Amino acid sequence: MSWSNKVLHDKFFKQAKKAGYVSRAAFKLKEIQDKHKIISPGGFVLDLGCAPGAWLQVACQELGPRKRGGLVLGVDIQDVKIPQKFCDDRVRVLQGDARDLTPQMLREHGPQGFDAVLSDMLPPTTGHAEIDVERSAELASVALHIAVGYLFDKFEEERPPTDESGVLKAKGSLVMKIFEGSGTGEIVADARKYFEKISRVRPQATRKTSREFYLVCKSRKPAG
Ligand SMILES: C[S@@+](CC[C@H](N)C(=O)[O-])C[C@H]1O[C@@H](n2cnc3c(N)ncnc32)[C@H](O)[C@@H]1O
Image 1 (cartoon, rainbow, N blue to C red):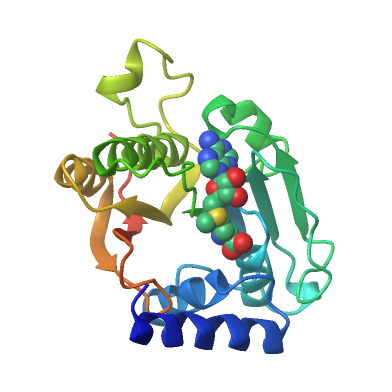
Image 2 (image 1 turned 90 degrees about the horizontal axis):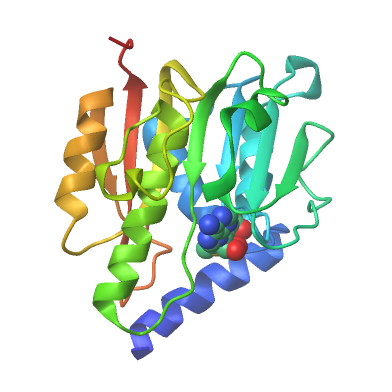
């Protein structure tokens, strides 16, 4: 890590600690939210790859006062302890692989669907750029599939899609982390079919050496 990047990294790390967020990732979602207003007061939010829980904290804050209602449902392969600060009883977590989630499991928590699907899922990095990009693309495809029922060609044979419509409500938004590389354009093009507006965001809290960016997909088009 370069010196300037280390200073930036330390800055966000310290800020997160001081503010009571469990990770500096909080500032990534805050920046996306400030720019794109993904989460609405009282909304239903699905947070894929939620450990250690900074996005759960920010998402719950964005739901507004408890009386507004709403839900933040986090999913992670790892065990997640819901952070006490900024989270209330509207935050729930499921431990498991997002690739095994079924619409039925999600509808138990959000029977009417979700207003926002967030994916900060990151596969264990191998150090081989091509493999890391490919795995990140797979997780982004999973997020897209969960949100809109996207029939992903590449993985279709291995995991036949179980639902054609996805859990994201009409006009809802999807945010997904993607590693820049071959295949990125394909995911962006696929997402474009389902959303009115697509933007790329690289939040300030992102390490300079990271290939990651967030694809912010706003306003799901009506199905059909
Ligand atoms: C960068 S961290 C997420 C940080 C989180 N947004 C926060 O604010 O604390 C990436 C997470 O993705 C999770 N992950 C990776 N692959 C996953 C999968 N297939 N299903 C569910 N979670 C996954 C990892 O366990 C890890 O906790």
